[in-house]
Image 1: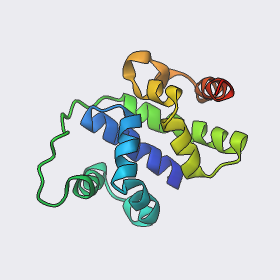
Image 2: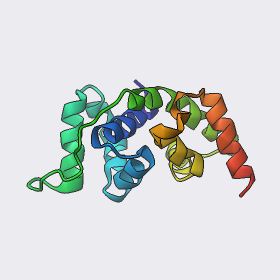
Image 3: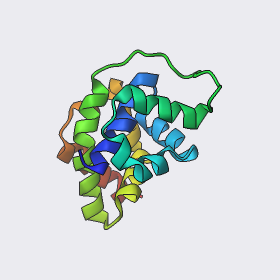
Length: 143
């Protein structure tokens, strides 16, 4: 699994696990240093199961002895679908805008399209990477 695919997997699966939109999870990860941890410890973490990674993420966000207050555990398969498509979208953004992987992830999750992609009710998660990228590109051209 590439580092990009791993980061997308962690964001999207954690979003499903916590019943949160993935753009909010991205912001949470940024605020608490989880994105830095995923980059720094990729070689170690990508071989572990999701449950182990979630414990590490929760410890970083909530601390060792704080109760996890966000957990709702109404997981769906949509996070897996988003995680599979997202690396292609991010790579398209990287190529189109000549930005780093981390900057492309940030651009996507902070965009309106990224917010819609994170919302299961829009159904955008089920569209092709090229279609989602075209919507993202259209949004950027209107800025």
